[in-house]
Length: 157
Image (cartoon, rainbow, N blue to C red; front, side, top):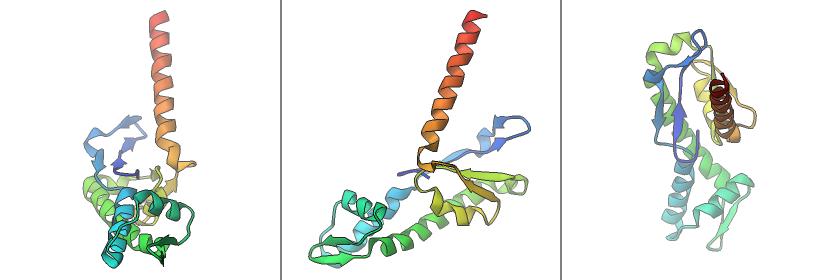
């Protein structure tokens, strides 16, 4: 789960291939939570704090002082995170329906991976990647190096 989107990909370990028919980008991510918290504060106070202030309060797990009032950002975000998890898990369930009984393990990556774990573990073994926030970047780096090696090997062969 990323900031604006959540990407899902199925990989067949037997054939070592990605199953293109089961990959998708779900247009929901952690930004949904931050914007919903901002909207809730705006509804209460008539004014909205910046998204950056909300994100920092969430990261630091502290209240946000705004317009002479403290807001329990962590609690406000928890409600939104549950709603986001439900949307994403229902999309995954619908998209992977025909493959669910064959799933061995689902690996979660991205800054919001921890939110999805309980929902995904309902239908498959689930693990959060080490350094989940940077897992996509590390994956792209490995893929790029692999492609570069193959090009070098092909060019010298």
